[in-house]
Length: 79
Image 1 (cartoon, rainbow, N blue to C red):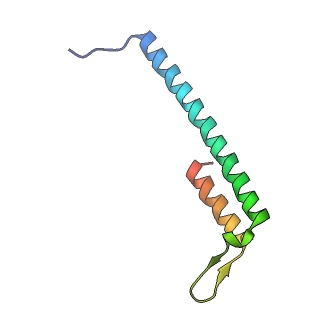
Image 2 (tube, rainbow, N blue to C red; image 1 turned 60 degrees about the vertical axis):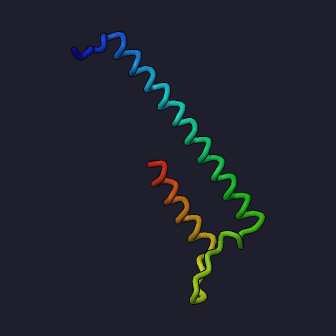
Image 3 (cartoon, one colour; image 1 turned 90 degrees about the vertical axis):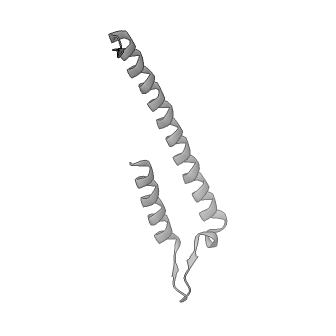
């Protein structure tokens, strides 16, 4: 026989899920802040580190890299 959760159990489950979602949202915000600060420090101290050189001598500058990284992180975090 299948157990049907009571109204109280369902409310508790919903509240637990809300708490878990809030923790995950906070973690995502922390990671976004960390990545932003890390990229800023790299761009400030050693921007050449972010330069991508292709085999034909083509390279992307920091502006292009920043754009692509911000697009990547927005899609990763679904912002």
